[in-house]
Image 1: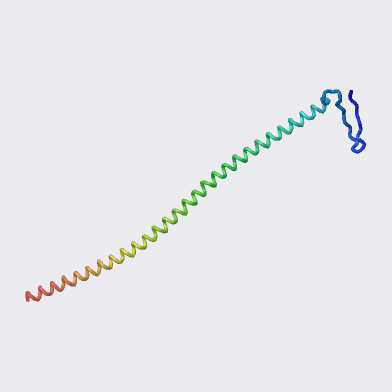
Image 2 (image 1 turned 90 degrees about the horizontal axis):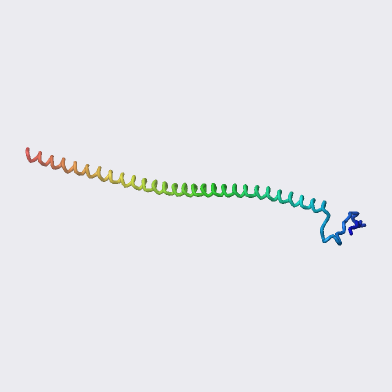
Length: 125
């Protein structure tokens, strides 16, 4: 048998379920089922949003990884360029030195040839 008691402190009503096999009244059960369904629906929406955000985060991480790799490649290319420029400067100095040496050797050959020519001319006359 169910009876209604009033709590003097909160002035809210409670329904006794003694003798009902621990079953709550139907309207309360329906309200709780509706609330559970609402919470499950809310949870499903939030899980979907979370999944979308996780996918976006994964895409952003992938983009970041690609950009970090591109940055590392760029830094490596800059190091290679600096090394190539150093070699170019070294080779340019070496080439100028070789040209100077060739020029001085050509002058020396011309000098020797002209002396030899001069000596031959002297012998002829």
